[in-house]
Image (cartoon, rainbow, N blue to C red):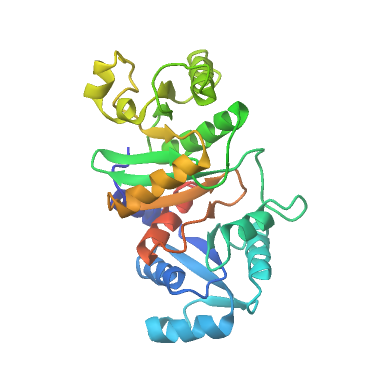
Length: 299
């Protein structure tokens, strides 16, 4: 089982080197990620966007890399940059797509286009990995699905479990989070959690162990779980946290970065090529780690 991002980076570097296409690459943080990935022998990058600005930034940041990247000029048109990046992935000229200056919604619109997009699943979801002292943990979905219904939650879990398997965890423990650990008819998320846990018990969702509903403390702290009478393998030991809605996931993810200071990475699952949609405020290292997580999902 991969314990931290250093192990993840090494795993990817030991495998075939991949190619990342960056949609609207005219920002310092994504160019920093491209430079770090090249210096680490992690990945090559194709820079799509405003070629003039991209070259100016490279000249300022790393003039030795001014000729190191293929640059495709789409000017200031962020929609065209997104469509161009998706076309390169669809034509197998790039392995993964990293969001640059373009909005997440703009990139996903191109990814989900029925005729020219990359969707291979009914539900796509963002899986966040974070480097906890006890190992790499996963959380989903804080980036795409606003208020998922039960069938969408099942797909979100399957996507997250797939990432856990890529991280060499063959049977991850999944906690479906809510405000409480008991089923409450007035709280629909608790009903969904109980139904999904029963589906897992009946082998309808393989490759993992699911428990829910669980409050956050019951999911991550064994003492808290035992005090509330939860003795399942998941209680206090969860590898994957499934949140009830996008607000909970978004807050959870940002707290990991800004309060806990954990290293994090994201990957969108359910598409032909992994899509990386880190926050534009994330630094170059975080975006490079997203590249590594995306490439790991292809090994």
